[in-house]
Image (cartoon, rainbow, N blue to C red; front, side, top):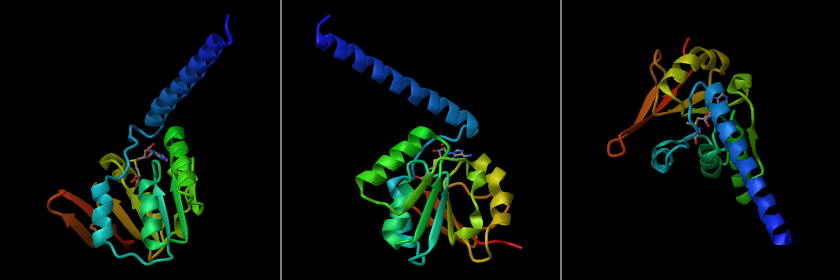
Amino acid sequence: MPVLEWILILLSFVIIIILLLYMTDMVVSLIRSKWVPYVASFDKDITLMQERLSLTPGSTIVDLWCGDGKALRFFVQEYKFKQWVGYEISWHAWLYGKYLLWKQSISSINLIRWSLYTADLTKYDYIYCYLMPFVMKDIEYWVQNSINENTIIIVNTFPFPNRAPHKIIHDQSWKKKIYLYKKTP
Ligand SMILES: C[S@@+](CC[C@H](N)C(=O)[O-])C[C@H]1O[C@@H](n2cnc3c(N)ncnc32)[C@H](O)[C@@H]1O
């Protein structure tokens, strides 16, 4: 068989393996995350936060379930945060996030490929969440009980069901809200 054919067979084999790994990771991540999809914050969410949020530069932030780190990249570029960490369960979202960081030459971000429940939340000034309503319900008490007095939780779109935010940022045209929470007694 000519060399070119061998190369094509090998290439097809590698592509099929990559596709199979990708699809397996997608299904396993969805099951492990209780069907929370990998959807990055929308550009309009980022613009809304850029225009209306006023955060302290040089702080620390963690994105609970960071996807490819899109929101984190915005926070670090906008506010020059000194430590920013994202937890992500899915391999493909994590790998893509790593690639984007490498492409944009951002070295200070730490994307951790692990479940968020292992995160030590006492280390952060800000916590960012963009999750599904049922997950917000699940993590509400864990997050509230694990943070410091001064930590601010920034919640995109789906609020905690049982606690009142201290501030809501509302975009009338985009019809989305950003909720800000502090630790409540
Ligand atoms: C809506 S995306 C968040 C995207 C990101 N925060 C942003 O704003 O660009 C939710 C992500 O949570 C991840 N996820 C779900 N359960 C998780 C868990 N227990 N630990 C870590 N990541 C999890 C999913 O794989 C998915 O990529």
